[in-house]
Image 1 (cartoon, helix red, strand yellow):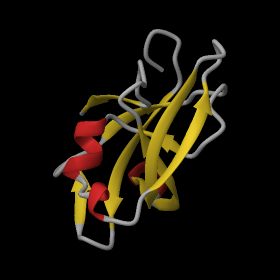
Image 2 (spheres, one colour; image 1 turned 120 degrees about the vertical axis):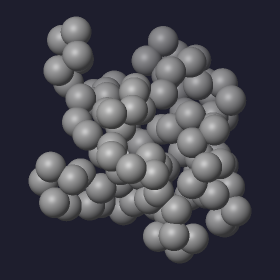
Image 3 (cartoon, one colour; image 1 turned 90 degrees about the vertical axis):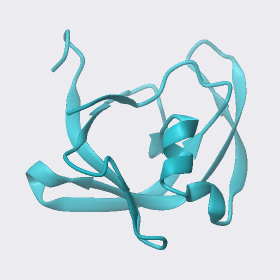
Length: 106
C-alpha cells in the first residue's frame, strides 16, 4: 500500500518482440476498481515495450467522471514476480489519460 492505495510489483512484457519494462526489477502497479480493462500504461512505456509496432486496436473508454477518451492498445503480458505468475491481456494507452496504472519504479 502507498498512502492507502493498493499496489503490486509487476513487470510488463512484449513476448513477441522480447522487450520488458523495466529492464531490471519491477514497477508498482495501482489497483483501480473503477477501471474495467486489463491495464493502462503511459505512452512512453507503451513505446519502450514496442507495443506500437504490433497490430493495434482503437477503442473508447469512459472515465469515472464520465469523460470519454480514445485509447489504442494490443495484447501483451503482465508478470507478477512475487507470485511467480503472469497474465496476458489488452494493454492500452491514451494521450488523453490523466493518470496511468503504473505509478513508480522500484
